[in-house]
Each structure stands twice: as C-alpha cells, then as structure tokens.
Image (cartoon, rainbow, N blue to C red; front, side, top):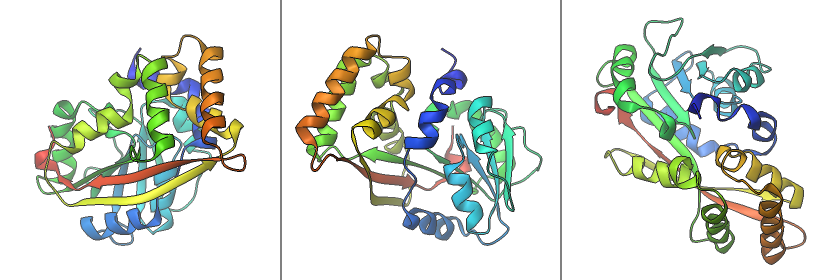
Length: 247
C-alpha cells in the first residue's frame, strides 16, 4: 500500500484517540530552535493537526503539510491565525513560501524518505536550519505497554515494518543532537482502548482477523484495568537535527 494512503481509513479514530504532546515539549522546541512569535514552521506529516494547532497557539506561523487528503481535511476543520494547510509529501514540499525557520514532525519522520527529502529541507532552511522530529513512544518498562507491544507483534505483521516504536527508535539512534525525553500518558476505558488500537494503520491494514484481535485486546484490558481504565504510558522523545544532517 502507498504510505500516503494508509491513514485514510483511520481519520476518525486518529482524531478521537491519538494523544497530544506535553506542553514542555513545545517549550523545548521553541528554545532549541530559537523560535519566537511569527516564525514560520512546517509541521511535516501534520495528520489531523494536533501539533499545528499547539504551535499556532504559541504565536507561530504554521504550515501543516500532509500527503493524505482525508487527514488534511480533518486538520483543516481548524482555522484561524497562524494556520495554513498544504497537501504535499516531504520529498516535494511544495510550499507557498521559499524559506522557513524550522521543520517539525510529530509521529511522522519514520515514514519519510530522508535521503530524498534532505535537499528540499536544505533549500528551505539552509544547512544549519533546525529539524525537530518527535514521537510519543510507549514505555516498554510499563507492564501494560509491554503486553500491548507483544499483542501487536502477534497480530500485525505490518507492525515491525511501519510501527513508530521500532522505526522511530532506529531513527533516533542515527544522529547526535540535543534530546528531550518527557513523560506523557493517556487513560482509556474499554471502548477507548479499541479506538486507540484501531487508529494505527498497522492494525487497520495488518490485522486479518479483526474479531480475534478485539477479543485478545479485551482480554488484555481485563488483565490490566484498574477501576475500568488502562493507562498508555509514553516517553515523548525528540531530537534536534540540522538540515545538513538529514539524508
């Protein structure tokens, strides 16, 4: 499947069940990249606009970019000062401006062909321009998160190939640079846990026995729930690269 189409079926679940990011992450981004009010920032792989909205609220001029028309349509339901939306991929980055002050991406850089995107990043930013990818990654030290990881490996052959945890960790190891590692979490009831699981493209497209997966997920919920809820425990991990390092 074309990666640009993988999230079309997940738009509603993504908008309802995917996490935001801790406020301290945005403080770190602005400080590390030296961004002030009016700075032009590309949110690459903006999805439903979670990051774009948070940055615009901090006074930045944000261009949310995504190749998927359905995800971008959901994002574009948010309008207002500091928000623009562009359908494009990372390798083309067809923007309405010639230069930007930073490129960020939440839960997206593991999807990119960085070798092809690198020259476009450098054209927009210059060699020293800041590139800041970040992810909410499930904490493997948490027992429920460890059990959920095993569930994904068992039921979705796609998970190892495209899942954020395996792919992002490989990417984070590639380059040195200032790092952020922040705690974050979401709490779910049974229905919320299903929604969170099915917001992932490797569940939507990688699980062949949906009823069997849901039964296994329900069993996992019962084993770990406390007062009818389970907690997704994240480490929000970010790194500052320079455009000259990308590719």
